[in-house]
Length: 401
Image (cartoon, rainbow, N blue to C red; front, side, top):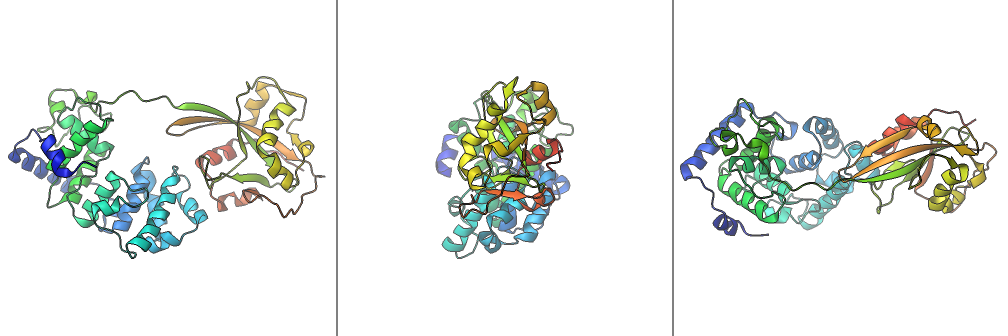
């Protein structure tokens, strides 16, 4: 990482010291009067600040608040998080998405326990050594919890600085981010760095929003070049985003004679790892007219060994409305789900299967650990993703008996 003084020398801010002081005073006066009252701002506990900042990545504040309360109640400190089992973690995070965040938090908590004797590190560089903590989160913790003059440079701050100074360079470029960080080093209030960062966060969320070109009132209008030139809509400058890739899946809703569903836990190598889903198989067939074999074979291809260990035979799986050929109208009736991740789109076609009541279930010593039979009433007791919730809502009710 380029050192602070080098960046400041490379990118001196085009304001006088008086302008910088006036900007700080104006921003902090607005924050003192208007800043958001959020639960993690009640004290300067670095653990609570950390939890909130990780939750707020890719997630709206209103969504985060109830999750935050529940997480802190269940895991009130670093030691509790370090010892938490994965099912507890995923259950507390269920619905927030991006589950690698909470898994990284547990690793970081264990690092704090072993490398820092259980005490949350205060130094910015030490914070960066923790799993899942990057420059933004380290800056937020260092400034808010420990009163260090480190910027918390997230999308809000990048947008604000880009508009204040009409920065023409692409903000996704490293050089541009260095320039913005250098400006923030020179702008941040050394007496109230945490409040300064939180004030800019609130300004970006409440006033200088992505879609608000002419905010009224605008507390920083005297400092905002893009507001004065009516060019706010042009900033920040970004290169065109890559289109999200599209993937089609068959979601096998397998139910036995007892009414239980077969669920599979995704492995560490898969998206949504550690969470339980109906067995999902990616496929590229055109879903117009297909045979039973074309529907069942992908399931057997990917999970045949596991199904055999469960005592399930191919011929014992019966499709709802069992027939030789299936039309597109059948699939529409069975249910479809679209789920959008940040970088990909999943289109899932539900395939309801009934396990023949005569099929003998084995108590195999080789029972695969990533498969379970579970009653519908107990699905809320295992960690499932938002995608799986959609699949449950979309499935066509049927009686396997």
